Structures are given as C-alpha cells and as structure tokens.
Length: 162
Image 1 (spheres, rainbow, N blue to C red):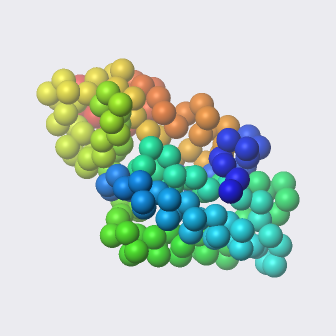
Image 2 (cartoon, rainbow, N blue to C red):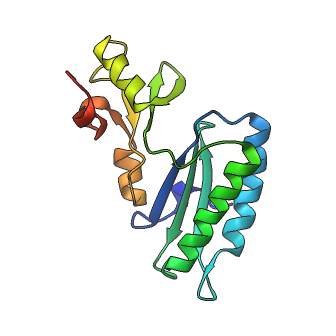
C-alpha cells in the first residue's frame, strides 16, 4: 500500500471524515479494501498511482499522483462510489461536511458544527484547539494545513466569539 506520505506534494488528495471512530478490526479491513481499490483504480484505462490511508481511526485519505495520469470525472466517480460502499458496509457517514473533528488531549472528537459552536461559547474549545481542515486538496496542503489551531482554520470564521 502506498501511504500518503510517499505521494508527491502536488498529488490530488481527498479527506473523508467518519462520523465515528473505526475499531482496530475495521481499520485493518478498510486498509485491505482500500489497497485493493487503489491497485485497480484507473482513468480511461490508465492506471492511477494512488495512495490510501486510514488516520487516527477516523479519517480515510485518498490521493492520486496526477503526473502519471489525471484523475478524470469517471475515476473520481469511482472513488466516490467506493466511499459510499464503505459507508454502507460499516454504517458510517463520510460525506457530512457539517461535522467538525478536533483534538481533546490524545482523543479525536467529532461533533456537529452547531455543537462545536456551543463548545466554543462555553470555553471548552478555544483558538488553540487543534482542528482538522478536511478541505485540503493536495498533499502539500495536507502536510501544512490539515491539523492546525482553530485560530488558523476555516472553522474560526463560523464560530461566534472565537
């Protein structure tokens, strides 16, 4: 399996956040299924050099090195279909963009954006709380901007009094 760290900085990347943590068995299964998917993934008959990884038992990261072959609409559709299949198999939601993931000590917590706003109002999270920016689209932005303090994230804009 090609890990995300082995992908070039300009690799196209997608972050899928689960609405719950995966069990260790699920992580093993998802890595196996994901490896099989990226090994067969192609665009107009050309194999895609891709990476796949489950991080923090909560995120599925998919990347493709477009220097070898561009990810076409059809190949992107295949990846979305694959993620939808994972949702069904594991009874998870990977497409709810109204959820926020943040660090609470060594734990990754996922909650609705409205609940996160309340946590900010109550002082449970603050400008230094580490949040996850799942809107990153390249390996380089993933490395620099995926995990960052709330004060530097897009979430800060939607929080009241932060």
